[in-house]
Length: 137
Image 1 (cartoon, rainbow, N blue to C red):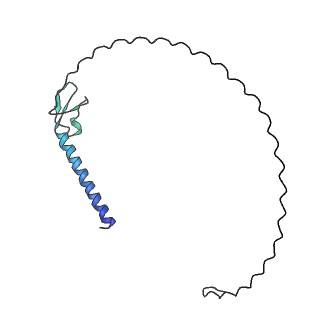
Image 2: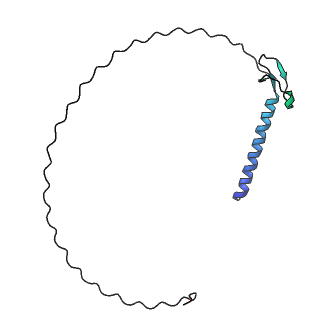
């Protein structure tokens, strides 16, 4: 299978997967009822823009159970932490002594002179090159 056919197959499988995901979302949304904040059912869904109410609806699954909230007990006041004592001031570090100057390096020896180079032989004259067929000379 060449690369182009493989990518067409991958794209088609991706579109099919997205379609299944969207279908599942629609099916789940159709199972929910719309309620207002007091819990009264407003309707089964909004079919037109004119169907909106001024309150913001709360989506609740139709098979859900509502729970009543209870107030939690007040927690005890925590004790105040004691103030810690300030840390002592550290002594200043001693001043380091001045270091002695380093001795001078010895003078290096003179290097010997290099020998004179021998003249190389002249290269032979090269043969003239053939004219190129594309040249206009």
